[in-house]
Image (cartoon, rainbow, N blue to C red; front, side):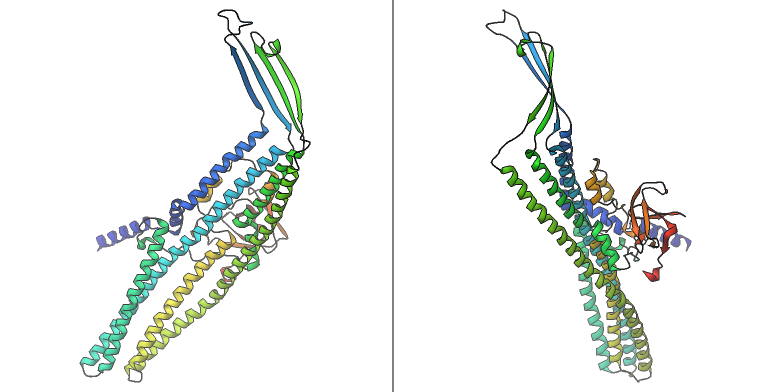
Length: 512
């Protein structure tokens, strides 16, 4: 007996070690997806464009060397000579061209980062939905198997009743018919599970043992109101940030185009050296100069180019508004569906409970001949239909929560986000910093059930470290919802930084 228990414990432990959690599935599928890989490569490629643009701030140094082998007028037989020139050139002013070019490439780089994040955000939702659908279909299959077991039990009772002459052939046939229908539904449900598994394995790019899947923590936290959710979405959704960065890119492009309307000023130093002074018949001397160049007329193309880009700036502003409307509409749709389904779940629980009580009553009435077998069979079928409806509702509610997070641009991107953030090793200009919020720390899907608090102060500072003298990164307003990733007795770390617990009120589960 002890040996059997020991083996069972080992098997359970082995199953846990080999479990494929939702977090594991996301990590694996993201690493395998070719579209994400393509966007990653583009992101890394633009990094070098930033470095190239940054080189415009640095001076240019050239070496020009001349080795004279023979000159019929000056060179004696067998005589050779050499001369060289070293030139140092530093641009002092070029119409803000280098600055705007660097900012342009930085904006492209940030936009490429959020493009990757946007793709991973939507891709993660597809993987999560597929993962949960496999679990749903597995539970559906278990419900249908339970239905078969119940119908087989009814058939056995009717068969015994019929064998002793107390039942009718009609009751026997009705029982067999209901059992056959339950078995047909089982195979249909089994096919649904197979299709769900195939889709999930497409994301995983390998075969998956369905028994290793498990539900994540179902208490996924979403904002308590649409307005709070929208505030977060409009501040940090990747598509919104991409739209803003695209406008910045166009503005920097406009500044870069205008550089030709200004003069260009260079500081230049030349050093000449050698044996015979071929350069100006002198040797070992240097020159220091300032070079000014200014285009007086180019057919008006500079002004036309600027006008064209101004039009593009206006278009980008319109696209920011479009992104805002798209995010608002999508989030509103998901949030309304979530609220309605959340209220419906309680009714489904009640419905299943009453169906079970009704079935018990029919059994009692049937045993004394006051109810028909048809009543029991119909109620049994509707009970299992109700259980399926309830399961669908609960899984759909969980998926809707992830849809809300995706519509907010807050769907967890696990360790993947850390990987790409490490690539950002250039200093962002102040203009970019103002537009781009601090990156959300990578978290696991299973950790979404973290505690949430309501801000009780008019303004609550967000700090870089848990210290009142630490740098202020931003602030929360009264009523904002803050969800913790880690905490101690005094401080809570939210997705934007550290905040003091003194001005926070814990949101109870019943209030969420």
